Amino acid sequence: MTRELAGLIMAAAAALILLAMFFAWRARLRRDSGLSAPIGVPEHAEVTARQEILYVATTKHDQPLERVAIRPLTYRARGELVLTDRGVALSLDGAPTVFLASGRLVAADRATVTIDRVVERDGLIRLVWRAADGILVDSFLRLASADPQQILPELERLCAASENGVNP
Image (cartoon, rainbow, N blue to C red; front, side, top):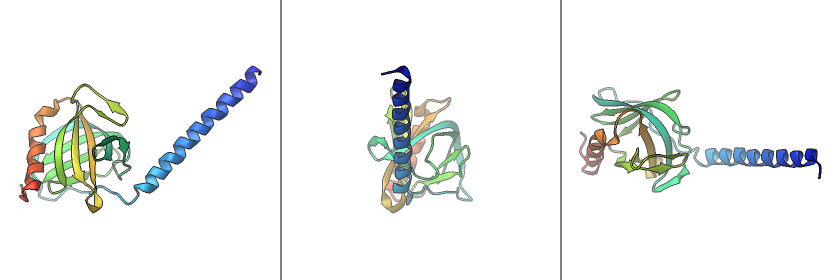
């Protein structure tokens, strides 16, 4: 076998792998096309805290390696996490603001791993929330400059308010 033939075979194999990845991602987008995150912040929501974040991914609940292509949370992005008295807003660069009302929030805790990201122990925040039709999903956030423990109590308070049927 000549070098040229070996190079051609390797290039063809790489092209096939890239093509398979492209079609797999398109299939995932089609599969999840019915899911979308709630857009827009309520008019009278009072901001209680703001943190710069890296939005990492949204996955199926308790399956941190199974990404969900929920719009507009499809791709990783930098942005801001805004805590309000009525829920949580994810204001990501290049995307409309997603607002997770306290009634949608189920749980908030710390995580170490999700698709595309492994960090130090408990370096991610995991928000468990209800998407369309009550489907539970997990969204993973990494705080840019603060410790997750600084905002976790407030997130847990918002989740507890939804469990008790109380609107904070």
